Image (tube, rainbow, N blue to C red):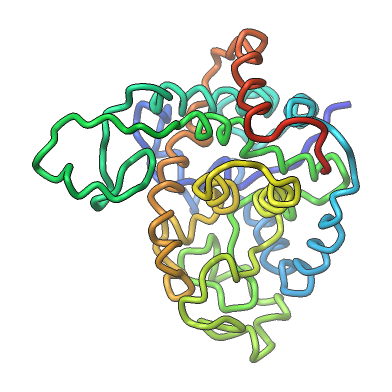
Length: 319
């Protein structure tokens, strides 16, 4: 049976992107009009009312034992065939195809072998090590580090949406994420009109800019709103995926638009968070905007991605 997870605001309200990756970038980040505006606003109203420190803590306990199902990663990918999101304004096909499209978009832009070294702020674009010798000296250095894990992140990133198949309401599965336990920042979607009924904002412990956190405590110490990002991040840690820290950041924070696009919540960031930020931003070039009506030949791609699964997260896992 197909499961409609309801309107996913994250599929509509996104920042401008490379025009080659979006059919019409003017259709994104439109908060004043559009056929989904009422439904999306209602979604965020529910989310911003019920996502509290207590709610998130209870959900982490509820799902933290990862006892709902035993299955492989590829079986979870196949489950996305039963997850239909009618809020997508551009295409109408199962999320499993989007998983492969995202992964293939990353694979094309970041091939695993012979990638010319590029830099963000003096850091290697691929292995993220500092490469000061590159600055003005070596025009074409080859990064020796593998990037195949990045391809796998594209396949994995939305697997947490299986929560919808286990009865979770869509406002607790999809949409932009934000920290609970502190006052929402200005770039949170509908920030000024959807938090009025959130009980945490009436609690002096949680209603200031820092709330229950210390300055620059690091995002690893921040309680994020509950959804598919946080669930999958915790699941990957529980099952000990052998992926680099960049992959865990991409999974946990790819929907944290107030941070990686809005520029907010810097008061909570450690230096490691700031170092990882470009990786999350790079991933988001491929999330959602690799969608097109030409669906990938999934069966021909399975052997390559099964090889990556066997390398980084093999066997039957706890979900």
